[in-house]
Length: 142
Image (cartoon, rainbow, N blue to C red; front, side, top):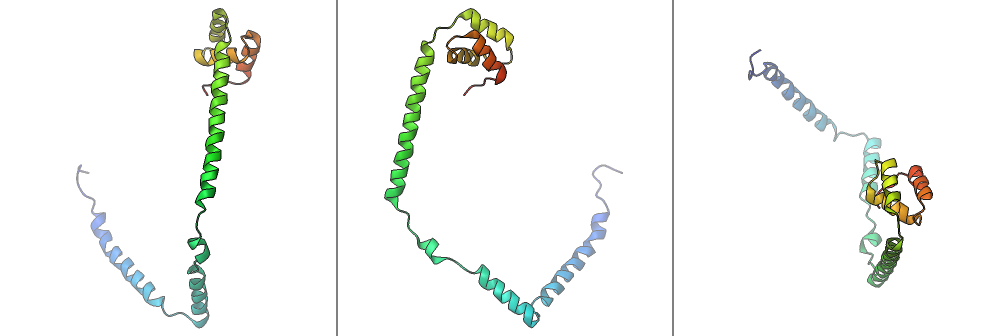
């Protein structure tokens, strides 16, 4: 075939589209002619789907209650942040040996140096405990 040539099938399929449209029109014409029972079922279905609960739509939100909940959440978040900052201060005060950190980095090359330093600080510069912890759970930035 030649590049850029259009297939002949697209022209041949055009009459099928017209036939499909005629079938759709025939189906639409048949739809309004329902028997008594199917008309009753359709009416019941319409009544079910048209139901709107007015009480739920018109209900008002108590703004004072929402503000109280938001204030509680803010306080909890502030407490968590202050506790985290205090923990970071304590961890920063722990003295670690550079040789211990270098050993951890050489033994666990897939872990970041900063993360291994944090693990070592969390275990009060105890190299064995820090290595055991790092082996059990892959340390990641948090």
